[in-house]
Length: 80
Image 1 (cartoon, rainbow, N blue to C red):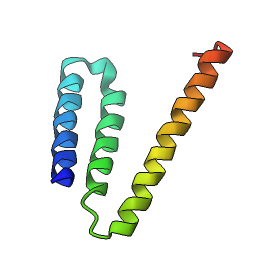
Image 2: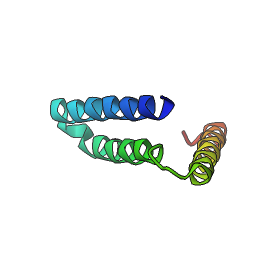
Image 3: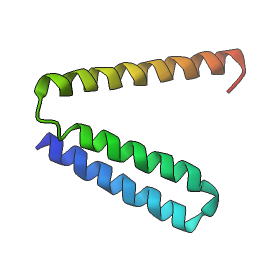
Image 4: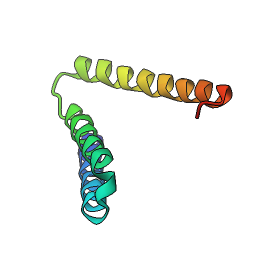
């Protein structure tokens, strides 16, 4: 059930990104990147191999942690 909810959530945010693109042409680049990332992340959960799914989820978690740390360092250094 979690996989279906993640897929549905990704589809919902994909629709939101596309609506923002249609309403405001200046965010076209961000909307396309966001839509592609959401499609990729939503499709990861359809993997049938549990071990591969676990590795991908762990990699995603550490990527999120690294991005937060990087942002904190930029903010502390006065660059963000």
